[in-house]
Amino acid sequence: MALTQFATQGYHQASMDDIAEAAGVTKPVLYQHFGSKRALYLELLEDVGSALLEAIAKATAEAASPHQQVEAGFAAYFGFVDEHRHAFRLLFSEDARRDAVLAEAVVRVERAIAEAVANLIEADLDDDHRRILAYGIVGLAEGTCRHWLAHDLDLEPGATARWLADLAWAGLRGVRRI
Image 1 (tube, helix red, strand yellow):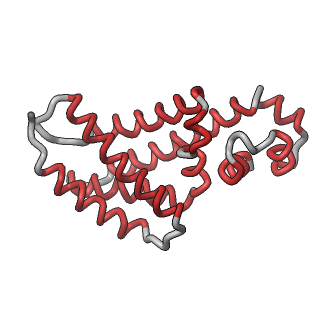
Image 2 (cartoon, rainbow, N blue to C red):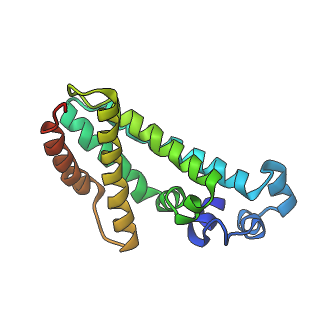
């Protein structure tokens, strides 16, 4: 319930009263579990980030080849967003980026995903170069999802994953040490 409230109203507009009412509990009960609205939001960010990272890690671990890893990673990301649109909106909302503490939590999620992707890049590159490419790949996924949701497009996650995987794969194959 809190995730939906935050995703639809934004962090600053959603009130603990609204969240408690939507959850069917009293505000004091909500505060027994979460000391503040920020603490609740931070826990939700952590949960959403962990779930997204877990989906990507599971999908890429099951892939049989590097190209399939790229596609599986995108498919897991897009599938997660398709099934959990409010979670994506919560994680990448402008509200979260305007608050330093919340923004740092989002950065931690992005960093964890980028590090996981960087570990999958098999190329003769130093770690910094590999990490930069990983952030680029994560940015492709995030930017695609922002556009998809902002314009309420009817995208099929698997097909979208194949398009982006082909784009990323072609680009990664051309990367060389500088």
